Length: 174
Image: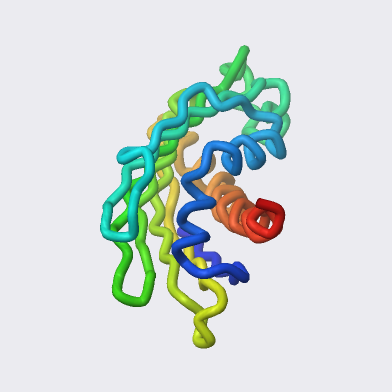
């Protein structure tokens, strides 16, 4: 099972990209999930349209906040803070401003890895951006891995789409 989501942001691709790699925006998103950002790094620090970019975001969330959403067989392992490690590899901007990213999200506690692609393409009128997200989740926990992945995939897709929806209003304010 995989996820695929699409949304439109009312800003051009470069502005959307700049928002997605902005620490203040990522903090805004993390606050919505009641998560802390433990590490945030963008390389290069101020990418230009011709640059590729690497983004690393490590978040942690109180296990008590998510334990009830997990299969009962996994709940007993959720103690303390749950780490979520996200890495993004962004392409340079195309002639039309479009960009692509390969995203990996790891949750070591659940031995789960999500992989996704994010595509930023200009809308037909070039005033906004179509954000297409597609990916899948895999978990390596014996006997439970497929169940965890099946539960996680729609949530990861919704989380990424929710992030781009929040981005639209955040960009309007910044």
